[in-house]
Image 1 (cartoon, rainbow, N blue to C red):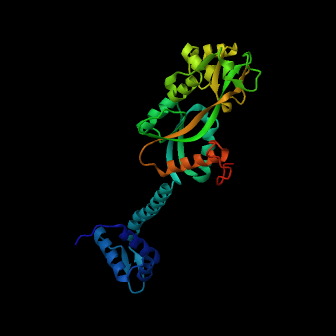
Image 2: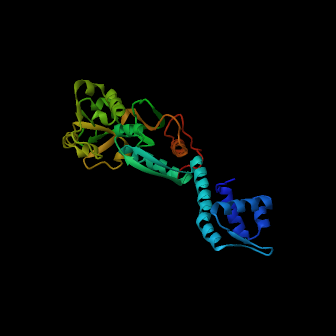
Image 3: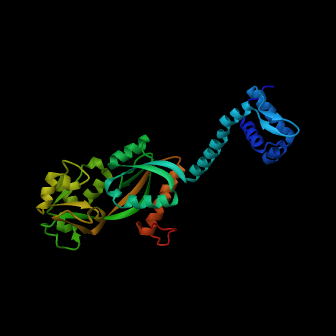
Length: 321
């Protein structure tokens, strides 16, 4: 009966070649010596040549056996490595993620999450791409990204959202603005100013929330949409920059973006607060172990820094450094 070579035959070959003794090799493999001898004979029949010289005094590889062993032994090493990698991936300790994020989240929120992820799962690698929210959502749906970290996204079919932060937005105004000297800017202070904002399609959910916060500007058309969008915000759009420098316009922004405001401008908190969510989006369905580790890291960071009022936990395990 023809027997095809199997992994057990390779293991038998390696064990006998290393022990050079059938009794010890059989004990190592937890086999009866007769069963081991049978496996070696099956392997020799499959290869078509004798692999061992057996005498009553010693066992040694034939020249053909040495060459064959040299070629097949690495299979066991590769197999063990593959098994270990598979176990690590299943645990989320290894794997690769494609992450999309919006520019402002790359300043503070995302770096803190990545620092934590690298602490708890250093073998998880990732590629992070800065995008607009709209691009992140469409890339996620197409399978281009595994996760997206964005602000206040619209509900989207086939995507799940995990809120990890509520960040209070403020405003950037020119030092010539009437409210520039105040510690906190009230919404009423901005009624006569122009709201500067990006094109809605860039981030519909976020844009709509801002427009709902400033209904007078929305309804009376006192809104200036960027003609040229860049990561520099109003600084990259000449018309918006000039209005704000004159003290007649404002832009909604986060303190983390303007810790050091450009010369001639200041960032101020708003009253009442304007909370904007930071959310992680993923496709519905099966979630990979690496995705789970990323989400766990994000939740730990959120708890540690009290990013969510109902989720503050200063005693989070192993907080980020």
